[in-house]
Amino acid sequence: MSHFVKVENGIVTEGIVADAYFITTLPGQWIQTSYNTRGGVHYSPITGEPDGGMPLRGNYAGIGYTYDATHDVFYPPQPFPSWTISAPSWTWTAPVAMPMDGKHYTWNESKQQWDEVTV
Image (cartoon, rainbow, N blue to C red; front, top):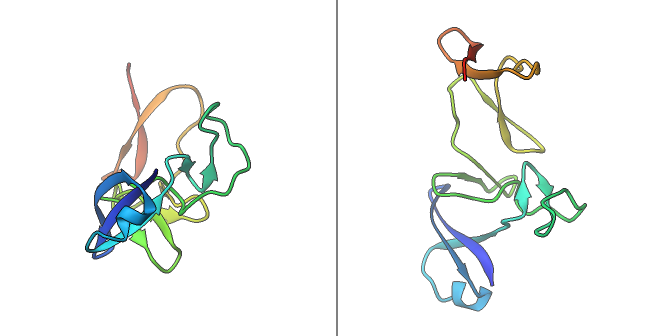
């Protein structure tokens, strides 16, 4: 059994776990996705650590994800208009790197900056 998603006009609309033969009986475009692929890296299903395996299509696809047929990858919806998609991870990147000082931050789109959040 594998994970498959239905893609309509480049957007994932549905997902199922099924046998590959069963998928061939369904109408529409169904594409396999890997539960073990995130950010262009394959992770072990046992340890959750990168294992050097072959990543499948950039990211595990969820409802609302985009399927880029040119690059044969899935990526999530754009979180903010200013963010850009980055290959080979196929994840969104803010125009300013988030501070790595152990504090919590949220992106402020209107100011194009990270604002500290008190937890």
